[in-house]
Image 1 (tube, rainbow, N blue to C red):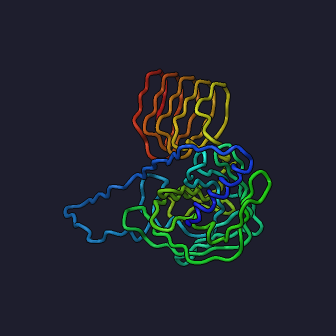
Image 2: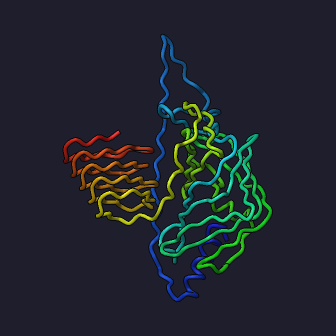
Length: 315
């Protein structure tokens, strides 16, 4: 059984014991990674015969993609893994002090009694990690892609629901749940590295606030720690709300005003009916602005924009 299924089954078992199991539909986020179109200047353009990237590919000012993003020490900021039948959505959480180190084309995921936390639907899940797992990285076949392998591991990871341990995994099994075993899209800025595969999204934060190699910034530490992403409430009616939500493949509507909202993950649709809001959106298929004086900033793939208000800015 795949480790992600082991982890999911453990949570399902706990749900059954509590008498509150629910057969929810799986919602898998459709994440689209931007590609970079290379241009050539000068009198003569030569076609390259190389298909696999060997270094960081620049996608926009201050951002980069590819294997060169992966160098040095990181902590796991947030993670998202695909759910399984019986789970109300995917497992979404924070890595705590769980670390990932990249060096000499290898990676090491490690924890020293580290506690990571997450939610599977309405169920709180904690992972206590004591050990490490290792693997390798190499340029992928597409621009910005990295080929990951999971090689080995030692130690254990306890899975707990409601404070009670329901399963114990090897750290290698846990790594196969959190780290892609195959190709993934990798993008980085000075503040974070995002690794996206079919069933995994992993956000890594440079340890000690160091900048990410391959980024055009100067590597300064962010002024504040990024807020933990909570589950998508679907609709926010209150004004003055400051929050970070994981879209989780579902739509989001903001009816309140003067809020500061960050949306991570894939949102099929984002609608803003209030006024004077500031939104940071990773990716959305469609953005609709019915209110006025809202400011929206994309951090990932921009979608279509319907601006029905006045004084809105999108960039």
